[in-house]
Length: 136
Image (cartoon, rainbow, N blue to C red; front, top):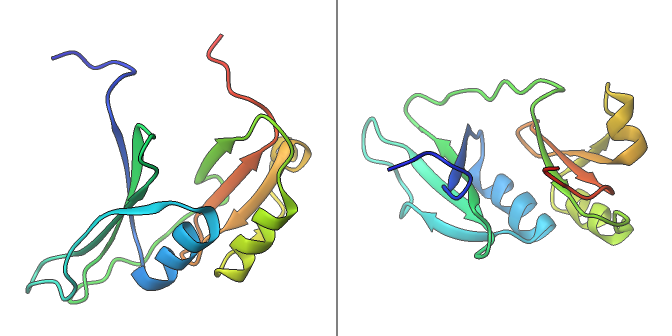
């Protein structure tokens, strides 16, 4: 087996509140629930919520351990960037805010010039970038 660009990527993060996180990422951004635990983690276990798009080669895994919660510790530079290759729709930003997000300025002027940064309920940052992605 080789490690290459065709492998699926999982981005795993702790969450304080999986319901609030789901509202933001699903109701706000439009991700779908890929998988979740049935609720109520077993002793020493995690409640898990996996979110993504069916055609994406990545997904978010959000975890909460009720008996020993891990406090998320995102910095201003913990970014998930989505390259839109076009304008950032105002209605998308409004929907993200209506679903628990907060539009914030970035400490990096690049992201302020080329996109919009929105914090999720755990403080992780989503950047919607007007530029397109090219691996050239």
